[in-house]
Structure formats: C-alpha cells, structure tokens
Image (cartoon, rainbow, N blue to C red; front, side, top):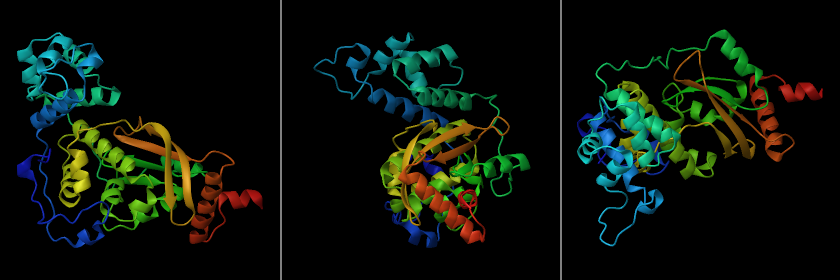
Length: 330
C-alpha cells in the first residue's frame, strides 16, 4: 500500500522502475496523477512505524513473554507521554489537530524521536490545523536566483555549490556543480531533479557507489518536505511518478523515514574524473524559506581534491576558458 492516498495515483501497468534501470520508462505513456496527501494516514503510519521501532527495554519497560507487537504498545506510549490511552489512540489514528506542543513533545520523547522526526511530527500537526498557512512556493521552471546569490555561488571555485528546493530540483549552480551533476542536467524534463535521477536513471548506480544510502537519504528528504508542504501538487506529482515507476522508491517511501540534510561526507564516482570523497554542508536560506544551498569540497591535498581540479579544468575546457586552478598556476 502506497502512503500517498490510493485514489490519487493512476499507476502504469507493470513496474518498469526496478532500481535505476528505468531510462526505458521515459517512454511510459501513462503518468501518475497525484492530488494530495492524506494527512490522517500520514500521521497514523508515521507514529505506528516509530512505535514499532522502540524496544521496551530502551525506555525502561520489561519485554514480557507474551508481547504480540514488535515495539511498544499504544498504552505504553501513552503512559510514557503522560496522556490517556484514548487520547494517544486518537492521535495515532490521525486526529492530531489541536494537539498542544507539550503533548507532541511528550510523544516525541516517548517514541525516542530524533530532531528530524520530532520536526516531522510537528509539521504533520501543523498541516492538520484548519488555520495552517501554506509555505511560500516558487515555480521551479521560472524561478531565477537574484544576482547577488549567483555571485556567491560563482565565488565558490573549489567545489560544487548549488541551490535546491525540498522537491530536490536544482535551481541554481556554480560551474562546478553543473559539471558535477551533468548527467542530471541532461535528463528529459526541467528543472533537473536529483530524486528523479537517483531512481529513474541507470547512471545513478555508477555515480553513487553506495546507491542504497543515497536512495535512503533522497526519500527521507522528500518525506520531510511532504509534511512541511502537504498541498504542493508538483511535489505530489513527483512522488506519484517515482512510486509508480520505481519499486525501490515505493519500499523506502513506505518506511516513513525523515532526516535533516546538514553536513557530512559522501563518495561519488564521476565518469570524467573518477571517485571523489567530499565533505558537504547544507544551509537553509533565510532570504528564500524552503530553499537551501549545498556546497561540496574535498580535503585539501587529497586525491579527491586533485580530481575536483581536473573536473574544474574539464568544465572550463567545455566552455573554452581556463579553470580558476589553471589560472593560479599560470
């Protein structure tokens, strides 16, 4: 069962979207139509999957010999959160509108939610409110960075720098980011989308050596955005398309995992320069809520840094100019 409301998807017959082999699926004549997310189902499935993951021993409860559930019982979550069983049951069944921040915090603690999961729970509660205001949206096909933002991106010359939205559309880049994600940019349709590349282009299996990890992160970012902006038709259309065409996406979407994409290290295998291990930092844009800037860079003096310089030289040669690294050496 797909977590997207079952009446909103018109699925193509068959399942051409096996892991990353779906370039042939671009010819699929029937596309999914997604109208909206069922907030009650989202709340139910999220809380139930989190409850299943908490072992009684983790929260100081005895496991017991006759336990018939994988994780905690509803009654145990209610007791840990300090609310009645009836009230918690109503919340888990989707009646989350009106729940106070104190109650949501208590449930988050009872279920051992991390920061991203706690924020997701609050987003679901906000979306259920009858007075909730939708977040600001931009048309990714027409949005353009203001001049100063593009100057900032272009000032990053040692690694890829780009702006994306929660749907994982790439909206603005420096030259290295465009060279880095060149396969994403030559996929059909605009704007270039990291999620669509990950699940619907076989080249992603080479670009991401640990494809499974990247797939998990991609789905978790989309799941987080779906709660933040539950009425975004373009986002729902993308989720519907990926759910229809990729069984790998469907499996991960059903897990209800969420995450904040902040900082860390990732390994890529670029077809021009080879394997690179890069540090990354993601930063939310105060001037453009809902958008983020991501910058990748290699450890100075490392083989990855040398390969990034090679990629910069290749990108400059494609444009017919010397790269910043080459200019410094001359």
